[in-house]
Image (cartoon, rainbow, N blue to C red; front, side, top):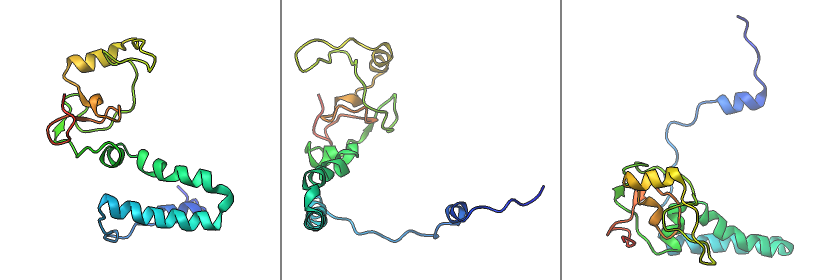
Length: 145
């Protein structure tokens, strides 16, 4: 077997990571938002033609994380009860939960596999975000039903 030289890009990717990542400071939601706003304000001044797009960045940065979204926009705290089906793993956004309705009041057709999850004890879709979070609503998160 001959050694095949790697491209510089592959070599850079394959280099070992530093043994310990730098310790990042932890910020409260208010401190985090203030720092995010400072950064976004700087970018807005630099690129005024992109202000509308930049304003959407704040929500996207937080909204992409289901937990951050629920902590910051829904007023929840982290749940302490893993879902018996999903065992604490985020599993997506699904339509077809029993009892789910469209905004115009029509009932969403129940999906068979979601009905099976509910029968097995899954309630992790009942958080305010609507995602299958992997964590059951409980008294800790504030949205137990």
